[in-house]
Image 1 (spheres, one colour):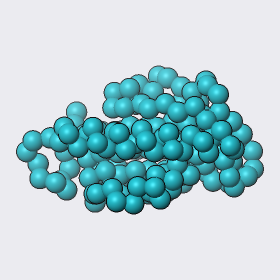
Image 2 (image 1 turned 30 degrees about the horizontal axis):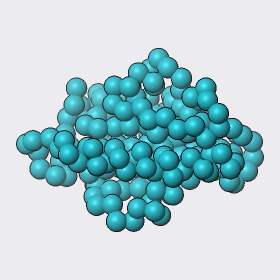
Image 3 (image 1 turned 90 degrees about the horizontal axis):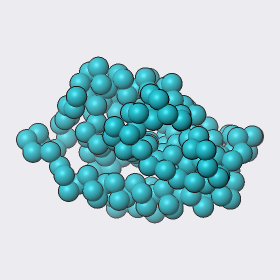
Image 4 (image 1 turned 90 degrees about the vertical axis):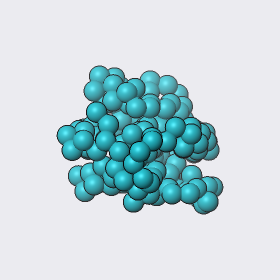
Length: 170
């Protein structure tokens, strides 16, 4: 398992609902040399992702999220802010599945040390294989946020465990 897991979440048959998957592919295409990073199309989530999440030190999720903003707006929820967003705030379209996956990692004492949701406000959730123009324009912004997070997290690597091992966080 790579140190950083990047998940793209969404249904690519429902226009902007597929924003997370499209943003993940954009980042993968435009950052092919990211060291120790795995990109995974998570679709509409599944409990089969629990092991991938639990074994990651860093986790970044791209997803369509209700931000009460204009289509294409991007917001980053990191660590405790992510947890609060899932529990109490506005939700990702997939909040039940993602909240459950994070709870599984927490119960196994394998919550990723660093984790973030990069939410993109959808505009159109109707049938369509491509995101709208406003959401497509958000992909470079979302990828830049993810790259910045990876850089920031690499500067504060935990002391002790060797690379590739799971770092437990309470």
